[in-house]
Image (cartoon, rainbow, N blue to C red; front, side):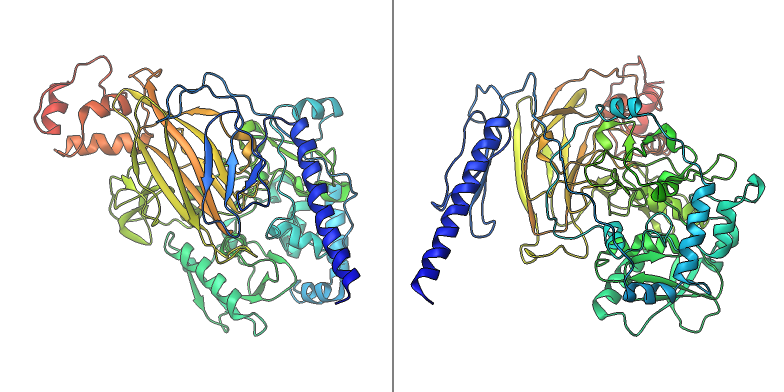
Length: 621
């Protein structure tokens, strides 16, 4: 290689390093409380030590990364992190400036789509959806309301160039938005007619579709098109297995069944809704390589619409169409109370829920804003939630002939009635144990901060996201009458973004364990103290890209909650009461006085004695 070329390359590298450092310094001057990286191999060492904790994250590739938390925390002990009286975190608003490109349906995508439309053409379908859109009216808010709305939650700097595109972005880039309803639903002629009908009586739209589109005997027949690769076939098989092990729905490979699903290597990720009769198509092309994406489309096939279509959605989210193109606004259609069947509580974390920036132009404000500001980055997740599965079980009348005393909101698993179906973070036959994901432990809190550090995931996939998630579950325990406090100190490789679709941490603070709680994947929330309503308190983390390292702290404080409140969920307390009435001797009454005081009718009563739990229960009456 000529020497001048070598000099030029060396100069370019040096210039880029210097420019990068200048930009970092400028950014640091503007946002003094943000984190900075320290490269400890001698390439760069530019760290600040304004306050603990300093977290060293070992073995993370070619560099040893160190993330220093710069929020101002006073410390008085070297063995633990002292309590924080107040924490303020500087936030950064993402501000893209480029105009969002318009993607045109290319010939390959057009051909693939044509084969799924059951007798019509892409051009006719586009026209049908446009006409449907003119008849669908979505309530708009004013610019004044919009400005006020977007001050209600914290903006973060989203990670640029994520390791994989979300399924809706895959479809958008394929030019499919004008040909699919809500980004990934391939409506048939009858469904379009129902959506455009002015007759309330004829509109049979529900989050979970009407009984005419059930799959008989809870069985879906399917087959793989010859063009679908073995890798995608395995992803689909994994998604089907996941659903089969937690519901009474079964998937049977059969290419000649009267009603069947043909799964193809199409362009984009999309499906019909419900059983249409005859052969219907489910497309899983390039960019759809995630078990959660396959399960999402299979849920459509089983009859599920998106969560934000529910009739009660306005109680939980505000739709802002300020920066949504007019052609995309019908995608925010809401069902009516008369035609909507909501089988479970509204869940921001449902994998059938849009993310906050659905159909928004570049630089625009979010289109879906949760009434709970903390949930803005939880919406749009790709993990099949406990309530997603419960909804399918309720819809298909999955049940068990015998009852189990399932705790923490669990219920008898219709796929195996000898055990309970449990929320994430819980396991064991009765959901009263920590889930065994091969990662995590039980921790005991004290009145001073303790720090937990751990790394999990798979370091072999540094260049792309995996097709499924790795999970980790910790339980934090405290003495009876104490409340647990929790604080995220630092994290490595969380991939900040809407939906926290790659990696995230979910401290389960509230007593409803069935509901997805706030998930965190952005460092702007680090350093904030959270107080739990439950004891023990699960900490659920997940990962599908490279490895994630977390550093968080915990302690207990005197309870500020009255003893006369059920801190555990209703189902758990009822199960414990039943156990008492049946003579069980494995539960501690003193703990029940705090955790299930109302259900156990222990409010204001002294509980003592050292006999069996039945003896103590009788003594408390």
